[in-house]
Length: 149
Image (cartoon, rainbow, N blue to C red; front, side, top):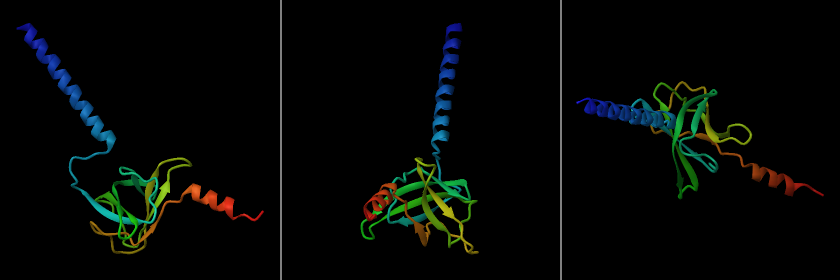
């Protein structure tokens, strides 16, 4: 009888440990089970080099969302970035989405610069103004090969 009780406690302890690991993995990974309380916006860029799905979205220096997906539009020759934001975040419809770098050699993220409009963007709307990522390699090569010697 005592052996069954010990086995039950060990099994319960193992199940609690597995549950804690799953909870921490989901929390640290930033995943959510449902999309309730969130909406999506779309931004199109000529170049989204270095931007990855799951990267953060920032407004006024505060993380407000995540990059949900990045796809290529073969008709427009652009990358289409879908952003997921919390419902409590409002984005004026004249805001600008730009791809920035976190630090000197850091990861890329999407920065939303708020506009001054009184009308806010709705679920599924597209940014009118966007700024593509800047390639350091392209800037260096332009500088190196454009100088007169």
